[in-house]
Amino acid sequence: MWDKWIELYENLSPIPNLFYEIICNRSTRINRFLSLAQAIEVYSLNCRYEMAVVISKERKTGPNYVILEDRLKEILTFLSNSLNLSNEDVSEVAHAIGNRL
Image (cartoon, rainbow, N blue to C red):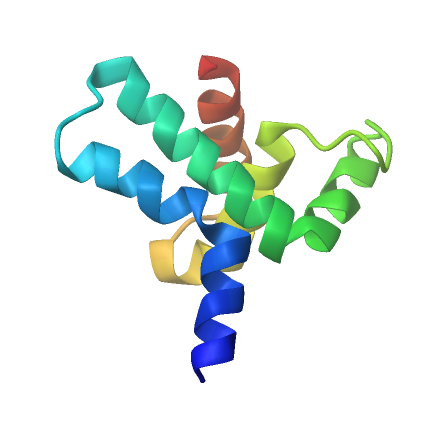
């Protein structure tokens, strides 16, 4: 169990640090948003990359070019039942957040 925890923390260590900055109010407004976006990208890259590549191929952006919008769309699709989002809502939210950066 300890080895799994260490492995998880090593692979995803930026995520707790990014949330720590947000929780402690060290980052403000746009920095909070950027920290959240970076946490999503780290999570996607380490845990859900293959699924994001599938969405990237559907957009024809290429298998080696996964943009933030693709990562968000994949994660939101995965969580759509819990968040009560339709496929159209998922696309709109991912596009809106991805374009804000």
